[in-house]
Image (cartoon, rainbow, N blue to C red):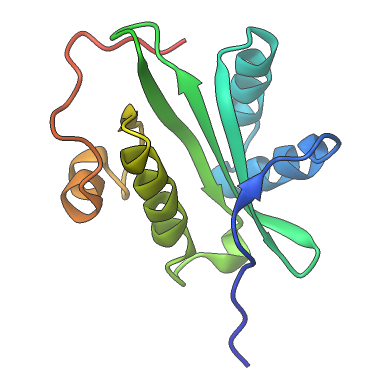
Length: 138
């Protein structure tokens, strides 16, 4: 039987260890875990969303305030648990976040590495009208 995740929602207090484990599994190490910890500590995170499923968390995304250009948000990291890769959950998760950001009139950029590159993602999801110039993340 096909299972799908529940609706995305904000990260709840106490779920950070589950998100850390998810990111370590998704990225094959702790670099992104350390990055998110540093962003939280510096209060650069604007929001954190999770994709729950069957009582666990299978997806995570962070939105951070960019240093430059002012007023822009960076969507990164985005992680889907490896057991759920290839089902389109990541694409739909980023799509839902992008629709919300666009509806709210937010300027943002999706920072990603291959195979989900920002150019390919912005073409499919209409993420931003133009790439920010001289961009700097926290």
